[in-house]
Length: 137
Image (cartoon, rainbow, N blue to C red):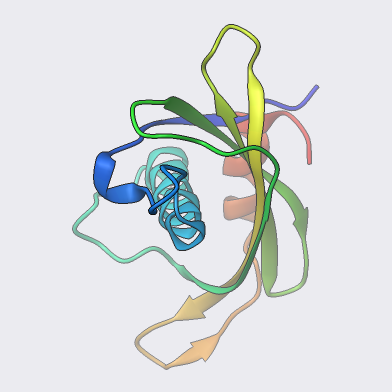
C-alpha cells in the first residue's frame, strides 16, 4: 500500500479571482509548495540547501472550485521513476468532511548536479528514501 505526503493549504483571499474561486495559476503554487515540503522532509535536506533535482514539467486539472477560507490538503506521491527523472502526482482535497477533490496535478523532476550543470541518474538512495516513506510507487 502506498502512503501519500500531506501538505495543508489555507486558501487566502489573494489566491482568488473575481468569481471568488482560487485562480488557476495559484494551483501551481500549491503544487510547488507541496513538492518542496515533501522532498525536504523525506530527504531530510535543510531548507537552505538545494534539492538534488529540478522541476521540468507541470500540469493541473481543475475539478471543483476552491474558495477563500477553504482548508485544503495536497496529497503527493512519487508515481514513477525513470533513469534520470521521477514523477509526482498531487491530488488537492477540500477538508469539508467529504474530502472533495478540487484539483489533480502532476510534476516531473530531473535529477541535477549543480556543480557540473548536468543531469544525473536517479540514485538508489533517493529511490530507497521515497519507498521507505511511501511503501510503493
